[in-house]
Image 1: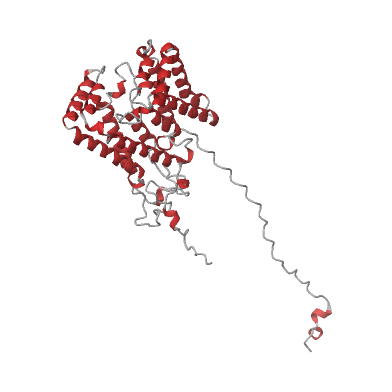
Image 2: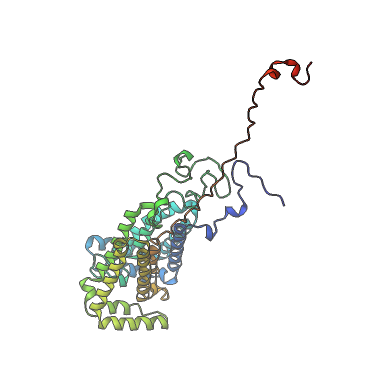
Length: 397
């Protein structure tokens, strides 16, 4: 069998042109998971119930309790959508499909992530009434601070800045400027910079990838990502202690409201959870706030890798419990527009999973210095009469 001879660089094999799961870095996997949730949103938006007048009434309900500056645009938007519900709902679903596919496709993921931020913020106001944060009744149990706000936050934290650990830039080109198929049409990266803008390892000098302790820090830096973590989880802890949530039966009523339309097994779980929480409402609120505070502070008080891992695992457990309390986001009721905040909280927690420590490079084996070439010792000049007498030399005379 003959082997190809590489001249001037590595040979690009056909298998290298495809992005397999093993070749994906953690941030790219999280981006694909976010794309999958956007596509799930689109599927939910295509449900028959979303093409009826119930969709407009559901949007109008988010205006309740909000100040006029928030409630009036929400009410106007809901009325407008209700008059053109079939066409507008189809457009909304198509937008979500495009966002999901755009994030999944590497060349368009930056554009799609940026568009998802704008779309999410608009929906957060006009479709969710700012998640009910200004109404005084928002709680982690009823979906605060709003699922679409978490979409926007994830888009920022998972922004594809710089190059991935394999040295590929956001367009999939390697440090030499070649795309996954080995083509090098212009020799420049997506920002228009030539290879001189990168260091000797092929990484962008402005990229934070090499020092990022977790995927969420690669785009905005460690301190900014940690600040997002603190604000989110401490904010959820504060919402759990609102007076309207600590009241008798408040949490139980929130959980019980998710039961209609659920399958029997999920309705059984939520019914018993609502009953237990109703009897111990204040204790449940304080306990939930304490757990959320622990999630927020553990990575900061103990920045070591085990503490950060424990915080992420605890956050995943909390997200799973909240998802059950939210009736799995109403996915089985036929009237859900998103899977709820819990899956997005779990995805965000995974974005803070500590990066693996790079393996120590094996010490280079000592190399023996090449032995010096033997040199002939100078022959002593003959002395005496034999050296002076030409006749005494061989071959003369």
